[in-house]
Image 1 (cartoon, one colour):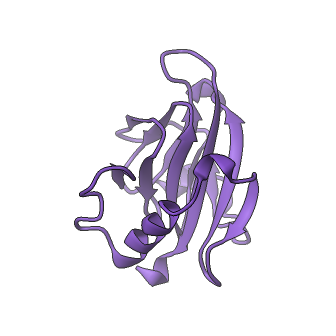
Image 2 (image 1 turned 30 degrees about the horizontal axis):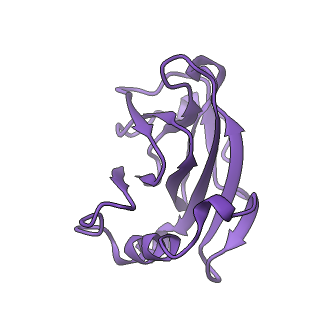
Image 3 (image 1 turned 180 degrees about the vertical axis):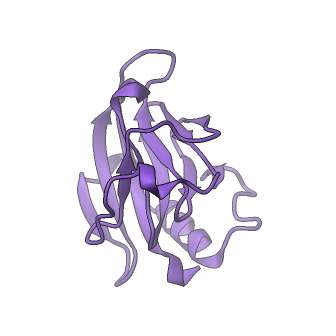
Length: 156
């Protein structure tokens, strides 16, 4: 997992080239003006722009991916994301959805910690890193806008 901010002048240090290129591209866009839905960045990388309402973490399932990295960028609002970097016990997860590359679980994330995102912050989740996005900050539900860039792990 990586966390940074698109406005940090040093955010590129140590990042894989493809993530730097995606972040540079995002910095050329008016993120607030992006329409919800899927946007292809190139023939292998795309992003989904969403408007969601944050909710209690207990009402959400954790997710993980096998073939893609998630680069989650908050555009508007604040959100907590619960994260675990311990390799998960996949027997506690639902069947893998290979079409959309995700696996879900209602079980708690092992050794979890919480990251709070504010606008222009991003978090990179590698395959098999469980994460539970769109959780409440300070117990208050809020409408947020975010995008999730999907990068095939083979490009890293």
